[in-house]
Image 1 (cartoon, rainbow, N blue to C red):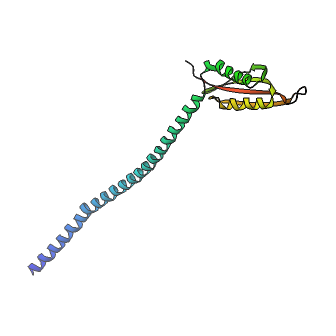
Image 2 (tube, helix red, strand yellow):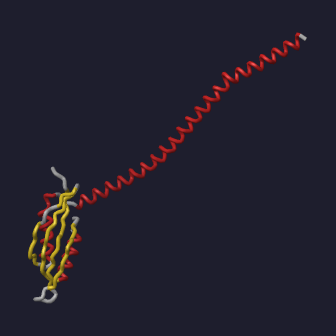
Image 3 (cartoon, rainbow, N blue to C red):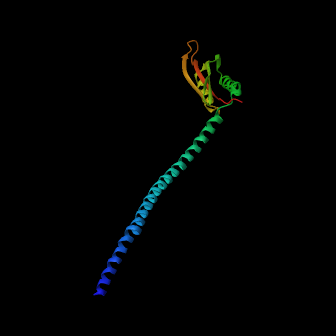
Length: 178
């Protein structure tokens, strides 16, 4: 009987060691493992977000490079401010080459924008309509950015096919000082 009692006490002790081991060793280890898994999942989620952001930033970098190339292209079409006389001379030469007679050429108040200056010129030319059309085509071929606005064409009553063209031509220049 003493042997049966020993077996019962041993079984209770063995069961007690298992319960205590579970409470003080297994349960905290499981809790720690769950916490670690949660942190790992959070970090994996953040990593996935960073991966998407990196992909998006690569696309933005490419777009930025394209925009910088476009800016360089348009800046190459904008002469420096010191070349305003040359561009005005080119326009006058084109008008004379087409057989147009300038009645008036007057500079208007320039508009200073960030990055560029717009210098409007009020011009009145007299001549043949075909010559004026050729003048516009030649202006379009200039390697500069030029805008024509407020164009008014009046037929000359004195001679057939002759017109008076009153318009504002805007010439754009770089706004770089120095």
